[in-house]
Length: 180
Ligand code: ATP
Ligand code: MG
Image (cartoon, rainbow, N blue to C red; front, side):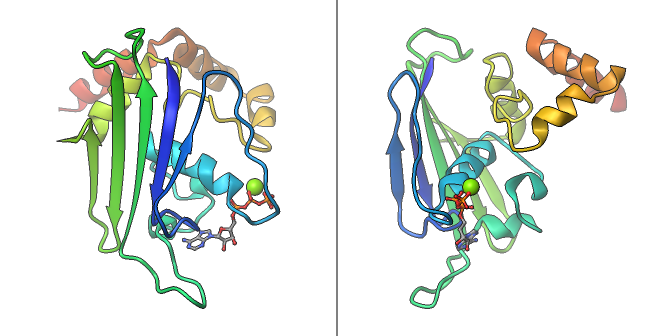
């Protein structure tokens, strides 16, 4: 399994549709300060379901929508699509290629899709949760985050291990079932 491409439309500084293609192996994103490198990483975690505006370096979720520049008006929606090569079947879905899409409108509404079919956030989280990628997999390590791993209390450390072992999904399902 590897990430094939990422398309941003109206996400942060990417007003026009922009597609980045990835090959297996290491990808480096280079560019001047403020050119949008971190915005690409934000788009990755956002499309995988990130719900915290702060984790996306914003004050509110709406901040992910292109806010306009002197020459260009703000946009009404942000959309990011991530295409994953699943020819090895690492994701529990019967497609060799999986595209997950997240759309958010300025009025607050949002949509998630898997291969074009509308789905719930939970479906995306479950699809990714055993794959080693996804929002809570600590696959995206931000600046200062290493410290929080090293200084975690026992409960925090247990959560990291549960994620790595793939049992977190089941614990969350159990918690959800018990709340009903
Ligand atoms: P550095 O090398 O300093 O880390 P970077 O390449 O990571 O820079 P980013 O943080 O990705 O840069 O991009 C910052 C730019 O994105 C800023 O110019 C900021 O104004 C712009 N930006 C962020 N959110 C939006 C938005 N909603 N609408 C328009 N532009 C935005
Ligand atoms: Mg940056």
